[in-house]
Amino acid sequence: MSSIRQQPFGAAVLVLVWGWLLFLVLAPNLLVVGASVMTRDPGSFLSLPLNLDAYRQLMDPLYLDVFLHSLYMAAVTTLACLLIGYPFAWALSKVEKRRQLLLIFFLIVPFWTNSLVRTYALKLILATNGLINSALLSLGWIDEPVRMLYTEGAVIIGLVYLLLPFMILPLYSVFDDLREELVMASHDLGAGRFATFLHVIVPLTLPGVLAGVMLVLLPAMGLFFVPDILGGSRNLLVGNVIKNQFLDARNWPFGAAASIVLTLTMAVLMLAHRISKQRIGEEGSA
Image (cartoon, rainbow, N blue to C red; front, top):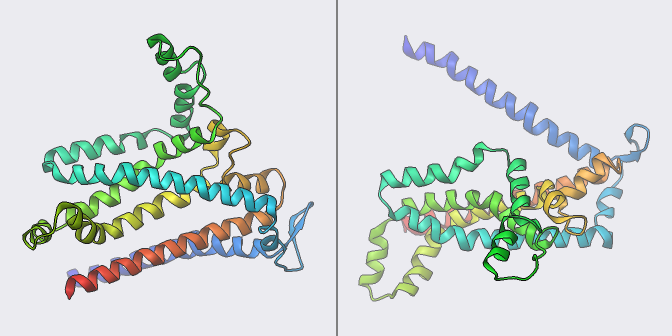
């Protein structure tokens, strides 16, 4: 009787899942792909014939510089998150379980506040008359306010602040599953701390590193409101280009083509993450 009831329930779940994937994931992406190969029309935004002009426009030196600069800032943000998140996740995995839950709770509490609001709060901290400059002036460490806002560094600080938990959580997951006997076996075989870290811990935690990179690198290139608030017009990300093409320039094919490039980059990172997990699984079984 229970199996008869479970079959309709399972079928309904499958219908909901596949319906969600088809209509809310596949269909919008197909529309973006279609828009990227159409012609720009000032009246109706899109028109025929089909062409690849939008993808050729991506190679324009002006936009190529923006993409490369955006990739550079996203890479610096990802590296900073990795350097901070890796030891943090390792230390988090070493504390007792009750304290782990409390620390993870504190880690995710900022997500309860809108990221736009948090970015504006960071702007007040970095401003010329903000909290940092006021504290440094009152301590006598500086004679005049330091310009931190509307710089490349301010954008990177904002991105690290918003995206750091996305690096810590996957790293914590792999550290929590790391078998301590493998580390002890490495020490028993004569390997020092650095050799154990390099040849045992790093390979075993590589899936978490790749997952964190995947969750930080691409969003860092797309968070257009962070440069708008903290960086000014000279520190644009790919997300700013896409937003401007859709809302200001009304060049929907080019905006769609830039979105497709970001999506393909995410697909490559996901493939690399899957391959690394398979290799580590094969090495572990061997």
